[in-house]
Image (cartoon, rainbow, N blue to C red):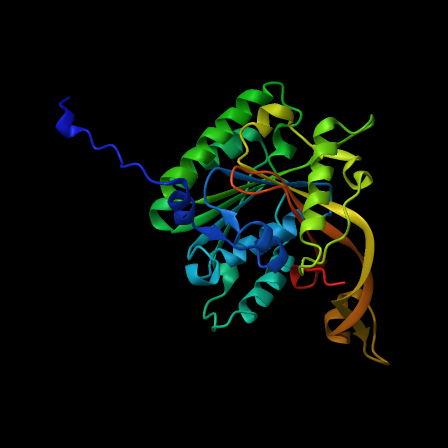
Length: 327
């Protein structure tokens, strides 16, 4: 090959390269602030945390925001949501989609749920088949800009050849991210810590405390980070997986609680009517009401990322999805 045939790209500054990367906003202003605008479209973004801390809620919100125009923090494309823990809660997805659509400065003329492609994988082999065979075909007919795997842990935690599955999943996910400019998000679970917190946990808390002191005057809705908040659990899959993650986001519960208003449906029986189960559809009416409930304040922490400092932001989970905590 002659030197004239070589078309290597010209060098560019790190600043210009970083600014060219699209970012997907979460829809929670304080979280988007510490993420410098949102999740980057490069490498693998990991969201980890204990059960019911808000991981899937955040993923649903990302699926909706991915469809928004670039100038509104979206990626102007479809979202593909791969569930490994059974069919996703489409009712909750519709609830969040409705709020996201109604909160935009323009009229959203399409149903956000229509542009979220759902798939399920019961084994790691099925997951790899989806990534290797089905997604490339899908990318030829749909402008997919977000791929979420929720969760990787449930499939490979008990596998004998865990490292091999992790490596193959990572290779395929990174290829999709780089070749098609797709934001890839993998959900990870946690394991319990029974001994003294490891050094990396102590370092994380010290760094979060520094960020708390630096930004105490800003509207982050901060709750002071403590070692107890992070000493109970750590991300699963060990170092084999951690080395492949580009950005790790750790969701935890704080010791603070707040009252939130939630919408709920109440089924009322019409007075004097038969309440036989076979005739229930004719004798019941449903109305929506708003009630108050206690909810724990959560924290999203940036554990590591090549372009972000270690930082955290507090949030709450409401009927609308992930929202800022404003004390």
